Length: 398
Image 1 (cartoon, rainbow, N blue to C red):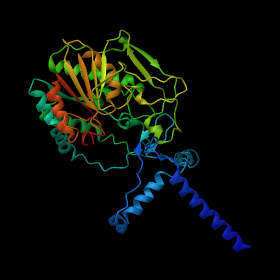
Image 2 (tube, helix red, strand yellow):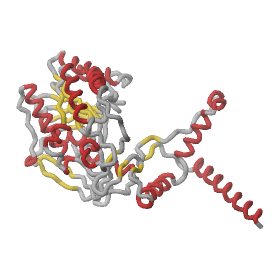
Image 3 (cartoon, helix red, strand yellow):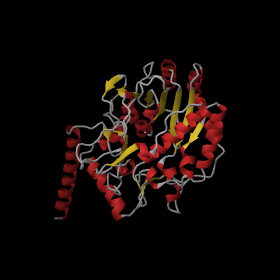
């Protein structure tokens, strides 16, 4: 009887494994994981070399793991267990809190000696842009924005690393290095801290700032450019805008990593000019609808930060056809999206480039070279490099 039971369970287990393998092979494959925000492994190509080395079987295991049937549901279930049954403090590198979800960044030693050399290297990386702009009388500005975990640095549990010791000297190092390169540095970290880091400047469940935080960013930027260039560019004020809080569930990037299990009643608010400034728009060189927001069709539809400008696009040009105003080029990643919806009204043309997907003048083989060529071709009066402080020292576009 005992042996019969063992055979029965062994047979069931083998049939289960076989069934999983068959379903993995037959079911349609996805190229990416929405919740994990990453690409899934492709089926490995078999060669004599990687079979003999064993790399093929390692890659095959990764492929099968990435494409196992009902994978998202299984991972969501595991996340639910970790959050609500085991009550783990950190799940998928997100700190679970009642009021805000923060990124977990480990425990570090108190070392700031590397900051200035790293900042100088970052400044050297964009020096070709400054040289290209200076050749026709333009100027590069660097706009530093705090990532959400540094904005809410005071909200970390007392027993966890908050890195509050790191952020101020990082800003100082960037300012020093950029000054050496003759590039003005505008620190939103310092500007936000000076205001006491208002609660409504950042999402509770996403690493980006809100439209209110973006408005402050636009004001700091335009004030700095006006002072540096002796211009009188229009600076948007809260009373110039009509704000609308969308009723839709908002899926922030932190919550997405938790498989949408922690909404915390976060909401996305939009802002449009009460007296609209007419404009045309093109994306990646092709005309597109003159819109700044991609709004949901129903109130039940889940929305993300990509409501602003439709998300990340390689190149966008907003033209207001006011040739008496200067042209601006904004270079940055997703933080630029909300800013663009406000900034365009101050310029004749606002060009925006996301280096991660920008094709460029020479086919995208060299990101720095492409953007340098773009600057030389477009000749914007002001070039704005926008980076969050978690990426100051990382290659732009990397």
